[in-house]
Amino acid sequence: MSHPQRTGLAVSALLVIGMRWSDRLIGLVSTLVLARLLVPEDFGIVAMASIMVGLTDVLLDLGVHVALIHAKSPTRADYDTAWTLRIIQAGISATLIAVLAPLAVSYFGDARVAPVLYVMALSVLIASSENIGIVDFQKHMAFGQDFRFFFYRRLAGFVVTLALAWWLRSYWAMVIGALTGRLVGVMLSYRMHAYRPRFCLSQFHTLWSFSQWVLVRNIGVYVATRVDKFVVGGYGATGMGNYSLADEIAAMPTSELLAPLGRVLFPAFVEQRDRGDDLLRGFTLALGVQTLVAVPAGVGLALVAPQAVPILLGEAWTMTIPLIQILALVNVVGAITHSSIYLLLAQGRVKALAGIAWLEPALFLALAIAFANRTNLSDIALIRLGAAAAGGAVFFALVLRWTPGLRLRHLLAQIWRPLLASAGMAAALQLLPVDALPALPALLVKIAAGAAVYAVLMLALWRSARLPDGAERYCLQKIRILWANSTRQSFKQ
Image 1 (tube, helix red, strand yellow):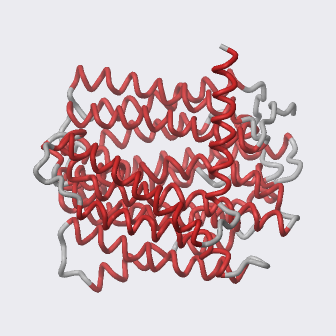
Image 2 (cartoon, helix red, strand yellow):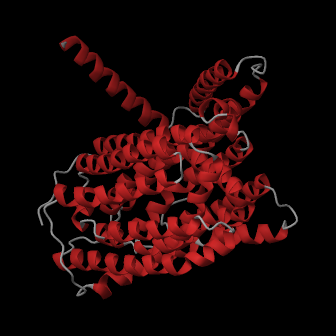
Image 3 (cartoon, rainbow, N blue to C red):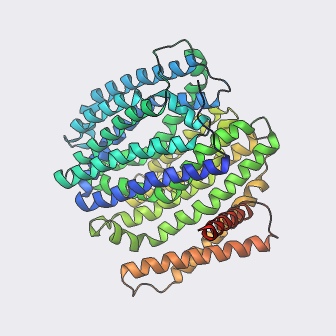
């Protein structure tokens, strides 16, 4: 199989960040427009169906793409077997969705969920036939092609969703838009990559030995991020719509920074896995950069939510404000532990990751039972925050135990300054006298003040630590390079 043209690590990171931000900018615009055209009840119906689909759709992702990236020299038989397994799993998933539809209607108490589930089952089947060859875009770090594929697929769904929302003013706009995106993704995958998969199961045992644990982990991750919504489902479509949109908004500042970096970190860590010192340096730098950017983004969102929600979503969504504030902190915890996942995955510790993935939902259920008498939406969000914090602490302890040469001081050296600076930013914004201002000026003042306070505190803390190597030095070097390049280009013009 011919390899796509490879790009460097730094360029790859920029391309993937650009891809993800373009994707989420489309998603953000779509969410904001849909919030004006539709009502919380519409979002709730789709969220209810998505829980059931996600629980079965996760079976579609056996992790065969992870197995192909992890393998040093995968053969055609490996690719064909991965593609075949994905189609078989999709068939099982779609069947389960159809069978479980009546149960979903009974649990959520809304008959509108059933037809949505049937259309989503069709989406699962369509997506499974996507060309397995596009895994090469990530495996060989050809992120320019990766960018185009995801952007065009997302754009197609975006256009269809908004057009139908304007016309129908119904939740069906989101359902049909998602179906369109998956269909376009299949067509694009065969247009953009010359590989043509065939039905084959000759490498089943080889892929399964790795993928079975990825599957267990994927299910655990899904349960961890959906168990609270399953509980919220008992509150009806409106409560579900408010909670699910709050969760989506709360995840944006951190997930849009972390997810693209993950696509780069995994293949990069795989290359460095046999070079212990390089692997540890790469991991600690990634941890530092992610914490430096994602933690203040999550904390900042929690602080500006009272002003941002009425402006961006409208007065109908004010119930989401306390939920966004709590769930944003859940994602801050995820930002701190994010790169550790790829560190263990590159080392082949899929069994360990599979077990860890089930830790947070277990903690959530334990806390939910302990506080069963507290039943409002904010309390459910707080329980999830407690489970995420406890799970993150245990996760770090296990990472330290399983990674040779890694010590607690290495982790603390990367995260203490962003955490302390973010706390200082939060304190400063709480004291900022903006209550008398209209919502938009108050929002702009808080954003500008928060960014300035955080930057000053970070530089002061870094200087007080005697300017150690790490995320601050790395980011400043990249800023200088970008500034020099832009200045050079302006002189040429």
